[in-house]
Length: 221
Image (cartoon, rainbow, N blue to C red; front, top):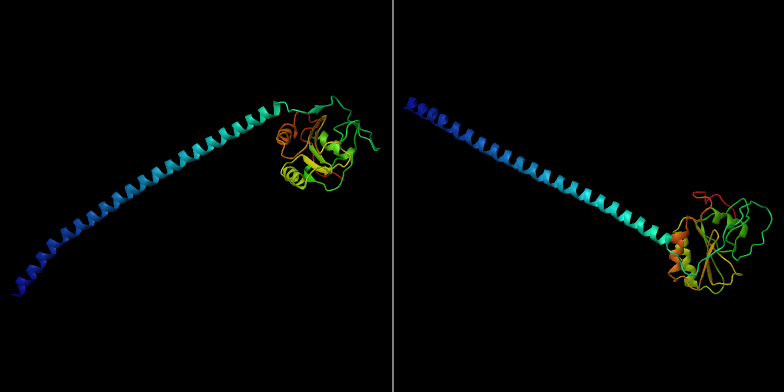
């Protein structure tokens, strides 16, 4: 009896081993299939991200080119009502200058410019220093007592967001709002006039600039 029982157990153990090995092989095969699927999914995901990145980059470049083209077109388009004053002198002087246009748009000026990196002054500034800022490519926004609080707020926001621009009150000017660049000027009645944006687009560091890239910081009042 004992010998028969041992013989039966040994036979059962020999039969169980192949089953266990088969199960392990099946599990390993399933794991390998999952790994292959995961690699495929990962590859597809990477491919999608690459394509998306390329598409985004292409869109950015195209959009930037369109924006550049639009600015070039705007910069070359005439603006109704703009006055130009031809060649003007550019000497540095210490004395006050009697400018023929109010506000001035060029001519002899102080050796020190006004800060004009979106600076808004709440008091009148020196003509001679403002003119030097115009020489550097700035647009100078001025206004008199006819300008409304809404006009002043809108213009201030515009200037603060625009490097190479400045703004100050100018009680003696005839027009409500005056936009000045070197040898160039436009008078408008309201900050809502679409020509305001057109003037900024065309003349901030525009072709009229006498010293492109010159500093608009480290100036003085």
